[in-house]
Amino acid sequence: MAHQTVLVLDFGSQLTQLIARRVRECGVYCEILPCNAAPPRSGAGRPEALVGLVLSGGPSSVYEADAPPFDRGWLALGVPVLGICYGMQLLAHAQGGEVRPAGAREFGPAEVRVGDSALFHGLGAETHVWMSHGDQVARMPEGFVAIGHTDTCPVAAFESRSRQQFGLQFHPEVTHTRDGVTILRNFVKGICGARGDWTMAGFVEEQVAKIRAQVGDGEVICALSGGVDSSVAAAILHRAIGPRLHCIFVDNGLLRRGEREAVAAEFRDFDLTVVDASERFLSALHGVSDPERKRKIIGETFIRIFEAEARRFDGARWLAQGTLYPDVIESVSFRGPSATIKSHHNVGGLPPDMALSLIEPLRELFKDEVRLLGRELGLSESRIQRQPFPGPGLAVRCLGDLSAERLRVLREADAIVQAELEPLDLGLWQGFAVLLPVRSVGVMGDARTYEEACAIRAVHSADGMTAHVADIPMAVLTRIANRIINEVRGINRVVYDVSTKPPSTIEWE
Image (cartoon, rainbow, N blue to C red; front, top):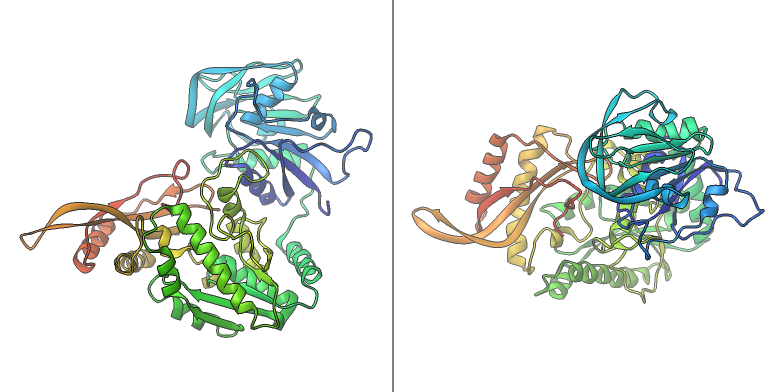
């Protein structure tokens, strides 16, 4: 460990990566290990840089026979421990306490009344939090005291000052918890004593050295979409290996209107090759409606194109891409018992027999960290602040079977959404159109229509792991709907998606 480190043991929560992100937000490096990881061997002591341990949430019950494994040796390392939700229940269960099904389950917002604790330094008597649990601590282990409660959860937080162990039944890592960042900062800075030596400037130095050691004198091709992630990945690779980096932009026929031209103009100073593969992608996707199959087909087709392009550059055997933490957590059961949500084309969609070796300098970062890194690398604000656009493009916004005609309809509708929302400067994380394979009856010009529906999705987020619905003025939504219905042939109904993440995802597929 090169930095002072807080480790997170993953017990299957979809928010485990977000815990790590919040800890890093405090300037403290954080790594994630599977829940069944073994602590340092007996007698070896703990690594000097290890300053704290977090036990994540998860979907299991600690009293079940098939509960995730946990080595209690972690609790003997002498570092402060914070258990979150399932992690809190595990702390109780592993040390003689009792966990039972709650009389009243809590899923969503709650008010927690907090007591005197270093964990809650700077908070008032009550704090607004996000709960998600069906079990709760019925009896605390010896030496623990309750430091927080709700109307239905008598032990919403506890601590043992002598053991430096703390538990929270709620999730401080999500933005829905008002003082969550303060609570985590109190833990890692105040209780663990971390000085905070994790910075993007240091990350650049470390990654440049790592890339140079990994690549040697080889050539690298970079999958460049023009989005934030691939742009930052290209920038850090260019700093590391200069002219041995070759960027490839693939027009897969699934782009927004004007995307190809904009990328070619924006990256004209790079060694950029534009490949028109739209017919190849659309042919491979013909008749495919299942979103997982779409992603895997798109992922493999991208790779085959990159493999062919690599042969033009002295047999380049490295492929760089802008994979992020959220891509990984939603694609695979990342190191723990987390459920797979969806396969991202650049993770779960990669073919097992690909000839290129991956370089993913951003794989451990969240989107907001990538934007900080982009500034550190000198990228323009317009490039850094671009809204995320999925690698599979409009394929995951055009639900159901794909065709050139349905993609045309979606492309035109999305262009209207972009044109109407952009001037409002609403600070959106994303705002876009989705074409639904749902037909409904309408009336246009005294004639009956039977056409598809379009959904508008607009959200605020900090990192893509959680999201709030944007409060778009009704007058704006009405104007967008009127324009789409009047200007885009094939749509006769427009709806607004008011779902948060979780439980929904930002993209529909």
